[in-house]
Length: 181
Image 1 (tube, rainbow, N blue to C red):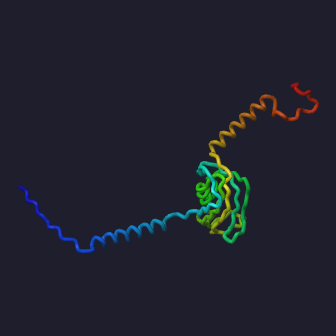
Image 2: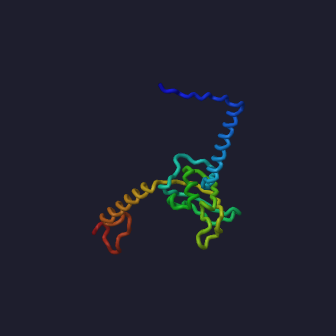
Image 3: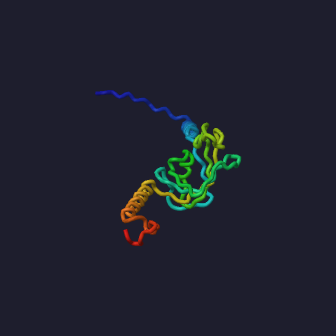
């Protein structure tokens, strides 16, 4: 027969469980603080006028009205009905666009790390390490695949028109008899 050695359990001191839970909570808070501090910066997007529907993705092309400003209010760029792929903006602007909805107007603040950082575009009025502010209206957006498909259809239509004798409504050559080749 095998003998089992028994170890008696000692009683837990009064308040020890509470101290253990407080220690676990303190460690969790410290770990959360370290994780939060390690998060990359992100743009701030404030809704001025709510939009509706889906938000664009990195694979979409947006049509926007915008005004870009430095923190002191100096306008460095503005445009109306500007089409551009979401993926081709500075990272902070792309991230902000993906939080917007069609028809909405927004105020965006982009930290310099997500804008141009220490190397702004040559000749630009944007200083190094500048945080940027934008007023943005998301007019519309489409997927890049949808736009490419529409372009292929338009090219095919143009080719068919050229094969059928030109573009309808185009003036005929001087001296030509209408309707005669």
